[in-house]
Figure 1 (cartoon, rainbow, N blue to C red):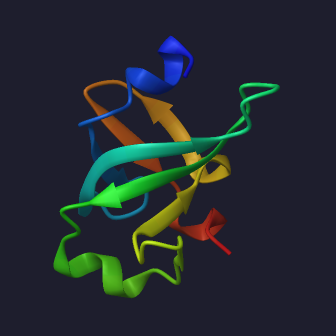
Figure 2 (cartoon, rainbow, N blue to C red; figure 1 turned 90 degrees about the vertical axis):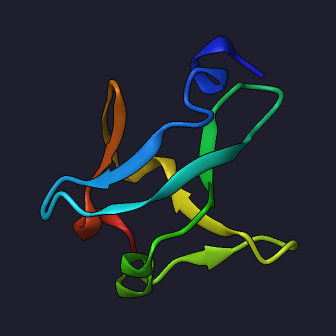
Figure 3 (cartoon, helix red, strand yellow; figure 1 turned 135 degrees about the vertical axis):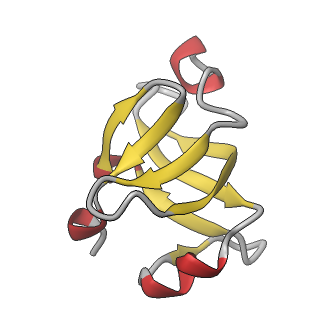
Length: 84
């Protein structure tokens, strides 16, 4: 996995619109050939996660599309509007 992806592990996911916390990044789905990041795998989901219509992986873990990520710092900021 790229270092960019590894740096995301353990960060808290926060909504750009509301500031609500959704959980922690436990893993990342990516295309190994290109290194393209596809989804952030959510662990320790909060009660706010029910407001989002998220897909799940084969292990029933919640997936947040990487395309919804707006910025990465101490937290990973996502746009709720861009999760479809």
